[in-house]
Image (cartoon, rainbow over all chains, first blue to last red; front, side, top):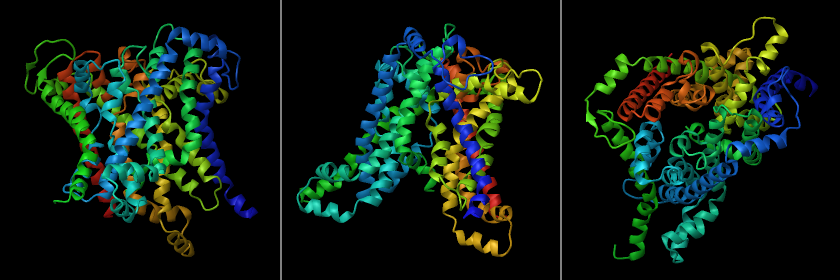
Length: 275
Length: 302
């Protein structure tokens, strides 16, 4: 046992050093968020917390409509998540449990759309949103992605393996309608899959930058990442306030990740690992 | 088909998948078609000026006279190697280490390495900006402990900008690739290694003749994802170098192809030219993936 532990010591040390490298930037965000702006950049650099939290908070609120930005980020992410949970489960159920003409082709088509780079349609999409009058509203960031291809892929995989066909036949004999089966059987049984889909969708929406940068140019209408990036390049930037804003953007992600890390990792690598 | 229940069962799947296809038609396919069409016109993103048909002039312009496009493409390819592809040489050894027989806390390491992948780019870039600050950054402070040389101006000089972007990209995505490789490693039967050990093969020999060949499909797939993602890098350089106004900082060192595409469309408002850049970039990505496929096939047949 001791010899084994000794043999594995270099491996553990290397892994721990890499762990520190990955963790250091996170540590620094929270450390620097607690120092007032004039003391963020000092020599030698801070590695421990200061007492500028309150001042940074006031400076942050004075510079960007932080509460509005938080509300926008949260609202867009929540609506996207709810929509995907509903529409992707519905479509995933169809692909997983029905035999119908063109199924394999249509499923292949859904998968193929994931390979289309976003920049191909962004410019005309923007023009379209101007015509719709959707610029500076939540709609362009919620509606087009309500039934995301990745979510459909995830739910098709999940439902294929986790719902026995006999259960559905029995439900039909009992007189349940097709939508009734979806509502009464599929959704309750799909909960573990829905959790993965939900967390992954929420995180993706929360971190989305290019979308709101283009579609929500007004600072009151935009999301946290875009508001913070705008503050970052402003002349009256306050580094302490910026760090606090970043810390508050990261915090929900880190909390969610600590609780759901297994599910998030499984969900986000699903396409790559199951090849 | 007289039975209404049976008919409903036939129609139901089409109803269930309809939302995706309706949304894709309106918000995906139509804009893509419009993008092809508009790339042959001289037109503005805003205002109501009539589009003027120019044939292939946008494409010719981008490929022959535009001073920024090749620079941006070259920057992107350099960052593809130093940022997106280099990390595979870190991710695979890390995965092998984490997969080690006597390693404890596998899940903890996995979680710690994966966290950068799910964090918002703005926060990541801003914090790296302070870590690489010339006078007060942690990196120059650490370098200063070991040498008395002049301080490196990471964010003010062209090579420094690329270096910092490469560090950010490696840091952000290496955990994702590590997890992918770890899953691949766990699918390799341990008996193969035991047999090799009996034959007296060293650890390095085992990985070269067992791990690498068996992992080749996984490596191919992970590298494909890196190429597709790496060629679209926009957020990191955009935020690090301060937006459209700075065009990638000193000597346009951080100006990537996608950055230039966004600049052309949303700062210069040139819709037609922006669309042409988008399609050229798309073809470059397809070509690079074909190269990746070729190389993988060549290695498979060795």
